[in-house]
Image 1 (cartoon, helix red, strand yellow):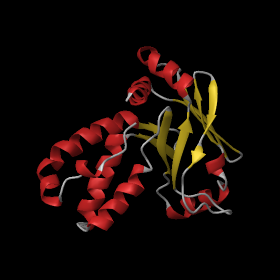
Image 2: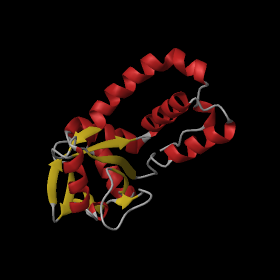
Image 3: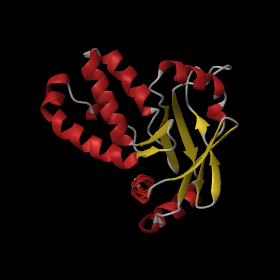
Image 4: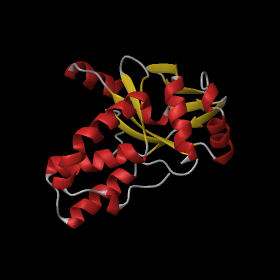
Length: 196
């Protein structure tokens, strides 16, 4: 998949002009790409457009206009864009109560090493892209990639129209075991990514 290029980024004034329409589209797209894995875990599958949106929003929020800072944001968020024959996701540990969240983050230490996708019967371990992994706890946000390989990616892309049961999100931690089917609408979106 194509990374976000510098010439795609709009200046602050230009972005404000198109932001309402772009925001509406990204919200619609992310709704299809977001999966509630459990009552504590959600996942958003990333692509070129979700990364572009995050870069533009960061530039807007932080009022970033210096070229070096723009390039830094571009490099940082381009890490979310999946490579060829790969899926990319941001996984969130979402627990509203602060005390409960802190306790669970400690209980779930090592969670980043226990994430996988079952794609058409093949288990693909997540490659953890999160910086600053801690030994005694997990983090609330995880950046992960799933290297499918050309053959499996092609099989998944070809199966897009019959997407039910194609992908399961798997967590196999002693304190959290989940096997959640990825909805067909999400699988179809991911299959389109693999064709890009």
